[in-house]
Image 1 (tube, rainbow, N blue to C red):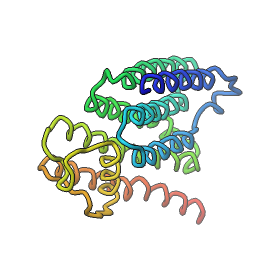
Image 2: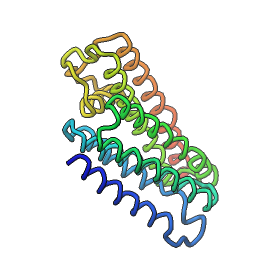
Image 3: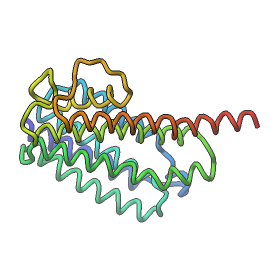
Length: 241
């Protein structure tokens, strides 16, 4: 069943991405600054990662969403249209090959976490240039806010995949309260740590787990205070002006 699901997802994903890349574009301006699409995909990914069961098909769907977010980020970058097309095509080919391999259980769960982390880390790199240019040219817009929120979600996802990878290769308990770490628990724990919610139902049992928790809290809070604060301050300043 996993093989069939992964093949159908890969085929559908490839067709959708190729249609998006080959669709007529009015101008280069119209092709960029679509950070709302990236944010929407990431929100779906976070929700799915938490509610989906630990199974091969759910890892296939989760990784597909991760690669789709990267494709959207590449397609909305401020590179030349030809460069965007080449890069998006490469991402699609890379994603389809890995989706099929994950569905066929040819890739261990630990490696799947690592690959998800690499894809997630590549998304803000793809977003950065266009987002900075948007802020410089137009100031704070809805798309700029969507881009900034996307990066915030990416931080939580990157730590979630890191937690999953470390838990799988470490061998011992990562959480005090449960012996196994799956995508759901890693994602849930990551976002409660990043937002400093601190529900206490999952706590790190190892030194590396505690170190990652402290690092994520610092990164998350610094991002909110500095980046989101600057965006909100800029909007307030423009209204007063």
